[in-house]
Image (cartoon, rainbow, N blue to C red; front, side, top):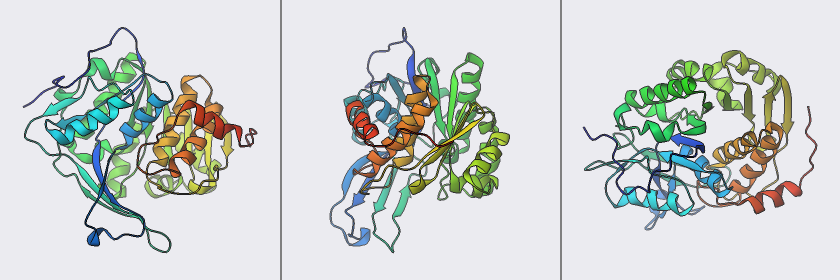
Length: 333
C-alpha cells in the first residue's frame, strides 16, 4: 500500500494555519464546444475539474491561504493538476502520489435549449477512489480554520466515505469549523443511499450548502426556500445554511435569521462550477466574520463563474468587488 508521500510537493508551512483546506477528487475534463457533438468530435478541450479543488482555487485567487489534498497518479496526468493548482497559489504539499494508477476523467457535451448538458464519467477505480485513511496527511488537512468537504467524495468508494467521516470527526475534535456541501451526483449513487450516508455528516457541519432540488429529492425538504431552510436546520447542526436556487439566487439561514439575494444576471457560457464558486464566495465572507457579505459574494462569484469556460472560476478580488458594486446592496429578509 502506498501511503502519504510528498513527492512533487512544495515545502510544508505548518507555523500558520490555512484559511481553508479541502480533500477530494480532481479529474481531467474533456469537452467539446457548445453545439458540437461528443460522438462527432475530433478534438477535445482539456481542463481540470473537481468541486473541492474549485473551491480552494477560487479562494486562493481571492487572497486566502488554502490547501487541497487528494490522491493523484504519479504520472503526467496527475502533474497537470498539481501544476494548475500551484499556478494559482493552492498548497498541494499534502497530495499523495500513487504509481501505476489511473486518473479520473469526465467528458462534457454542452448544449443549448431544448437539449441538456451531457456528462459522462470515467472515474471508477481511480487513484482518488482508492484513497484510504493512511493516505491522508492529517497534519496539513487539519491545520486550518475551515475544513470544506462535499458529498461527492463519500460517493466515490467505501474508503472515501470513511475518509470523509474521519476528516470531519478529527476536525470537530480540534475545534476546526466544518463546511459541508451536499453536492449530490446522481451518476455516482442513488438518492436513498446518498441521504443515508450524508445525514450523519450534515449533523456535524457548522456550515451547510445545499441546492434546493437536492434538499427536496434527498431529504424531502419541500415548500418555499424559507421552509426548506428550516427543515435543513432540523437535519443539521449547522449554524449557517445556504440554499442555492439557480437562476433565482440564494437563501441563507444564519443566527436564526433568513436572508436572500437574487442572482446576478449573467450571459451563460458554462454552468459547471457555479455552485462551487458560490461556496467559495460565501466562505470568503465567513472568514471575515460576515455571513451576509458572504451571501453577496457567493451570488456574485457564481455569476462570474457562469460567464466563463471551465469548472474553475478564474476571478480576482478586484473583479468580485466590481460585480458587487453593480448590484443593489439591500438584502431581503
